[in-house]
Image 1 (spheres, helix red, strand yellow):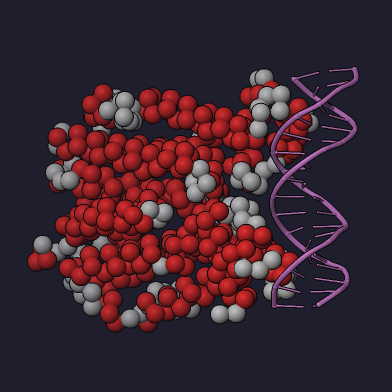
Image 2: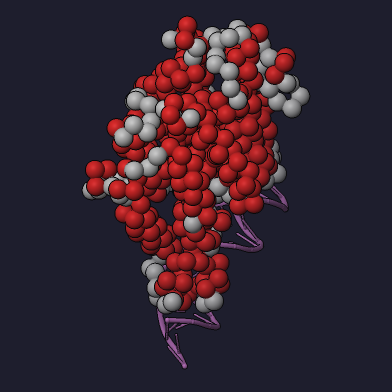
Length: 209
Length: 209
DNA sequence: GTCTATACCAGGATAGAC
DNA sequence: GTCTATCCTGGTATAGAC
């Protein structure tokens, strides 16, 4: 791994830990094992390091989105993976738990969550990314999924978007609550399970109950 | 208003705007209309100003909680206002919208939301307060309310806590999304309305539909 | 591309006159 | 309790040798 990449990685870790202003160039350099002055051979400023991190996260998440078939402006739901279209209610719990755990533990996603919360009011780009990923895209994705499930008869008919928010909002709340507590994942998963059971109880068709 | 109070007020505004590290003592002093050195006659450090703000917010919110009858360790739900016990489903929408708007616009609450998001990872106290107010207490309160409504026959029987999370989580998500966009309150209220209608549709008893 | 040395500045905080 | 002046530290960034 070349030095530039190591700087980016360590900076990502430190910014996620202590925030942008709470991290000094010296700290980053030290973590990499060079002097702070040497760092300026790779980046022309601290801000440029931060920007490179934003790019890095963006790429990582774009890659993930494409893999998972999450819709975005270019990639609408109609093209999404066949997998999701065939999803049935009894699988919803497992898939949700896996996605939830992934969000909590993926090194990019979890650090991005922290940085976004600390820097959202100073940085429009990161603010926009966060809202797109954890709000708009997530809800749009769920809505599309539920629309398909309704058509397939796996879910009661209704306003797919409102149902999607009802389903996703508790996940978002749990992410907020447990984002920084990897030790309490089990507790989080238990609550998540209860919520999804409640969801299935309410929205499932009689023959799935 | 004495100088010490003015300092606290301006500091609250500036910390909410630019964060703790993003706000200098000079800025605060300037906003008050004095020199930065003079400020140290009222507070012995920048940190002490921040702490006084935390105390201020704490008092404000404790006062509100008592007024609204929100349960806490000392003040359990059994003592809560009779008003809530008599709440029926068709009033739920209006009450929720009022509380939601209050959270978005109250000068202490809205600034506290921002500060808590920026400083949560550096400051355990503010982190704890945020979780208590916007997560634990809010959910406990809703659960207690719904338990009463179930007893009174205004709501279908079920796990009050899971139902409370299903109800509250979308409100939390909307607060996250619109906390910093006072210009889009109408959009937020529309979505909130849809969600509560969905909730009533699902959890309301037949005779309320 | 790494180092040492250093410039430069901003921010927190103190001293002491008024 | 406010001011001016000043100190000190730490952080960003550059220069120039190796």
